[in-house]
Length: 253
Image (cartoon, rainbow, N blue to C red; front, top):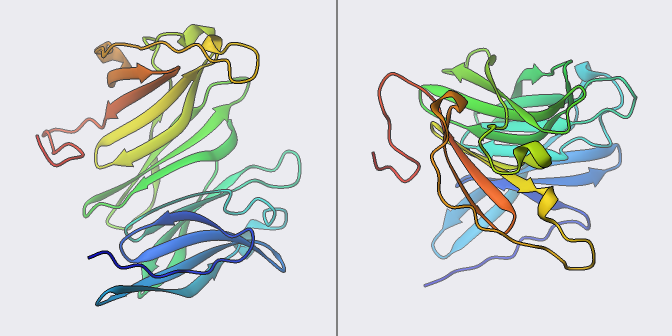
């Protein structure tokens, strides 16, 4: 039997992520944008969402982050990452990484990269028992293509940059305007990124020429496993390299 319960959100409050235990939204309060954390409680035939925490830009970040705070959020397990752009020209975008402890999220890392514009415009995080992983998308200086910086943390320790992930040269249309990184998803050792081939768009309302890209195996040097596309979009799959093969997203080897 299906059970439902309504949750009332404020005007302008939008859902940013959800796990089994928490719902995260973005809203605008008196002092600017807020990231709100609701705790989900289950009883027989009912789920209750209770506002338990409101996150605002960390005071140590300084002024200017309130307007765009929480424009991009990613949540998994007990980890939460929040992006914020600064109002002032020349001040770096930042990503705050939060970890849940005793039912409350606390800031454990502030990440920024001077060589990236819009650092954090794409986010995906994965909470794992041994190694946590976070990928952050941004635009290197002078580039129109997104590049992802990969960070890992072992057992809640320091977050460290371990690699930079760019678009593979083998994707059809990459050299002629392929927009890499429009969407990103991460689970375990598998990262999926979408790319939109802008050269296929036909001017005019609703005019789109679509093509189907057959499944293909990308060169090993790119580090990508495959590309599958349909209707202008390519979906790229990349697997984190490690000594022993692990389960895929669906748990099968």
